[in-house]
Image 1 (cartoon, rainbow, N blue to C red):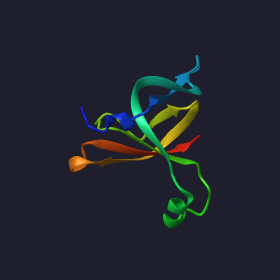
Image 2: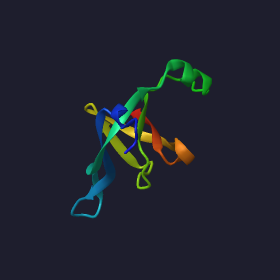
Image 3: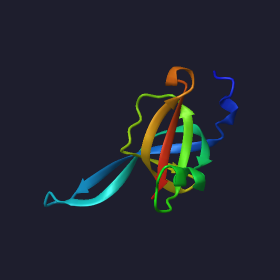
Image 4: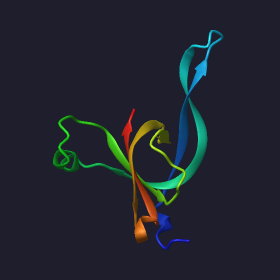
Length: 108
């Protein structure tokens, strides 16, 4: 176990985007299927970070830090605190970029 695992204080759920098909073979509506949940640290992206990154509009970005995994993709949705977040970026950090994943997501 990692020495700083105690900082992971929020349980988050990963969901996979999908669709349902009606009797005529047409897409009926979008659905989210539960995949797995993990412990995470949650950090709001500061306004100065958005300004320095060149974003010209206000967006609700949040960063989640979780233990390193290889099975997370940007098509997943994170559910935390009753809100859904669309993943915008995933990057490794820590020892050889394989200790943590930093996931940047936008509230949807």
